[in-house]
Length: 556
Image 1: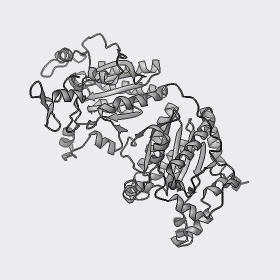
Image 2 (image 1 turned 90 degrees about the vertical axis):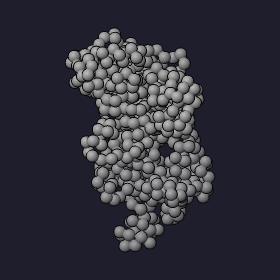
Image 3 (image 1 turned 60 degrees about the vertical axis):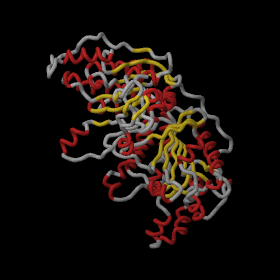
Image 4 (image 1 turned 45 degrees about the vertical axis):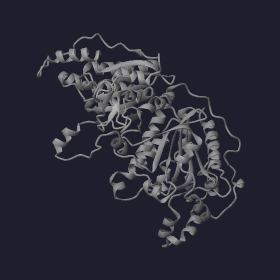
């Protein structure tokens, strides 16, 4: 691999990292894939280097790059004629355009890749660039294989005027056609990715991965500062900033990208065999459950050492990849979600995340989802529906986040949108109350084909203390309210709010988390075994009929 474009040569053996200004041994820098071993700065790669890095050896087959003609519809001249700039870019880079498109495999998984090269006129989006990216998308559509976009661009190519601007529309509608066809799309964001490229195909893919430190935005930092007269944060528009603000899914170091992409690309492959059912995994007979005081169950449901969604993901799923953000403004820490493999079947796992100690509880907002959290749920569910992937939700919250910010950001609307979305998902959905199921915040993850509850879980319209404070004028009457509300799993099964109960180890899931996870895994596997063969339209009809029945007896 050649020396990265941002590094300053000292001599044939040493260079200065442009990130931290440290001396780096040139051979080691190349061995580290042009990543500084001192500070982790990811230097730019050419399109050819990127294809070599990502695609399996010997699998790369370049797509046609065009005729090499000069497209200069405006006969544009600034300090130099545009045609001269274009010819010079082709001579210095040995490329026809700012993107190289190819078909190949990554970890054996087929892919069509469109890789941008910043060396070619700053990776600017010209008519030929947009045409080649669109053709790559059309190739992916024709072959029904995933599309990978690797971006590096300063934005639109001004010398081509509106012809450049229209490439945003053309490439975006090409992505829309892949969405309609249910074909997986991925973006790998490299530094920098700006302007029309960021505001079109880059940010329309199912999953967005960024290299550490990679910058992405609509307008550049200098333009924004000059326009608004404000000093921006040091990490503004970096991958880390984007992740914190819910705009990308994952930050991935260069050495790990092939493995991650290979796992994700397998989602575009043939449907794996159906899951096997596990006899007795779910208790469906009320008589098999012992009667206990509701308040005792409430206390067990709130036990801080109970396994969380991320704990269960680690126990139950292979290769779990957490995905982040609502693609709008934030990444709610109270909601976690991502893709993992259950006996070879990819599933979208989404759940509340409380944590085990004071520090984590505070960091996770005690499992109370914000509107951004509910919008993250919706985004991940739409991705699962597009790809035909079953969804598993794990519910553990006293309720959705209350307060000024939540109301300003539309908490009620976000919950309502999730209820509507889940009712029409054409893929199997299994929801499990693993701890507390409180109010609309729980139901926002609970519209499912199979609704289960762990043996020591509770599900209620309000917390017992909240009910007691309102109706008995004292939160101390919580135990009385819990009994009156009939919140425990036995009562939930008897009244038909859950379809079955997942057994727990004696003393509760927190006493033997691995065993509790084995029980949960068997219950989910068995439920999906029943649902996976069912047609999507039938799933929707049955799910809606299931929830239509609740309370129908109130008006005989």
